[in-house]
Length: 322
Image (cartoon, rainbow, N blue to C red; front, side, top):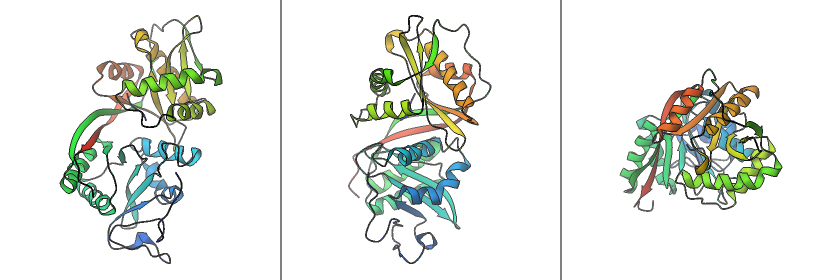
């Protein structure tokens, strides 16, 4: 399963439609050139694109939660380099979005082939570094093909994912011995360690050694992790929750140390955080799974999660500099 800066502007202003100059006295969204617009200004991105992001909280869950994290924790929340955001405007309406928090992959909203091609052209014209892409499966494949044509990159499939939405919650029976509880400050060291182990388990290199501590501190601040503990009080599994944004909460990550797996702990703690998410007002409770893991896909469906859409992740290798 996967979950996962300063506000610098160019001298011409924050928005950069490739091939179309930004005029400070006007509105770059009224340009007749490139329909994609790129910025490092998060506030402007959310002001322009917030309604679009909220229009599909399920398909846009990562866009919503990552930008909320940047808004509340600061632009360095995911790395030292400035994040980049982009919106697609057609006929005065926003109909596509992307972000990238270096050094991580590009993340896209669902796009048609034509719109993915236009984005590839836009980013290539800006000289943007794109080490990989993550998106709804069709979108990811279309962008990967377009980027390969423009840069000579080889798109290497990294992971296939499935997005699920909770229907009727079904608590696993029989429940394992023990109980669930919300993690507190005294659990910080455990959360840091388990988050690092989780990242390694899903095959991601931890690009920011500070990230695990920042993740733990952020989740503890809003009671965003539940633990399942054995009858003697020893924690044996954890499940996290993203904050409530646009009526949705995503369960992420779910982790049980290898020696403790296969005993029902993950199912029990996931059911508990799913209940908590609804208690906190979530209209949609979501989670992603790795499609290569039939155990977790089966488990979440038994709890009550139903498929929404498949996603795909690609890494780009051997591309020429733009």
